[in-house]
Amino acid sequence: MALSWQPYPFKVHGLSLSIAAEPFDSDDARRLITALDAGLAELYPPEQRFGPNLKGHHLEDGRGTFLIARDGGRAVGCGAIRLLEPTTAEVKRMYVEPDQRSKGVARAMLAALEVAAKKLGVRRLVLETGTYSDAALSFYRRAGFTRVDCWGEYASSPTSICMEKHLGSIGL
Image (tube, rainbow, N blue to C red):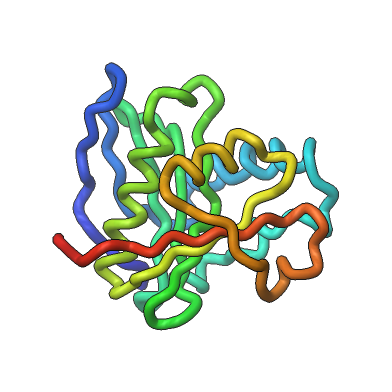
């Protein structure tokens, strides 16, 4: 079972966002992930795209969560965390629809993922993004992530950039 929690309302640039845990295999989740994968396919060859390696069972039994951001019921973004170690989780599948970008949706999604991570006892978030994903790199740097050596499947990818962020105290 994925981490469950109540929707959290966000007021962002005229949007009324609600971000909540939803099934990884829901219709909206599949639609958002398909769009994410299509965008990444324009930048990276298949062997350098790792997002599709995340499966629903990786998030079960308290090992992570998948969140969807909605504006007025419309799914406009998504993101996930999965535990790698008891106090380290990986940010995965971050995506915001193109017409919703630069409105604060990604910032709200990352904040919600950090809350979910802290509820799991996570003290450190890590992620992988690509060398051609300039907007993502800039976003994560602004959010407090710093570059680290890549690990696991990312270590041999010439286009992988890995980052980390240490989370503050649990103040929930």
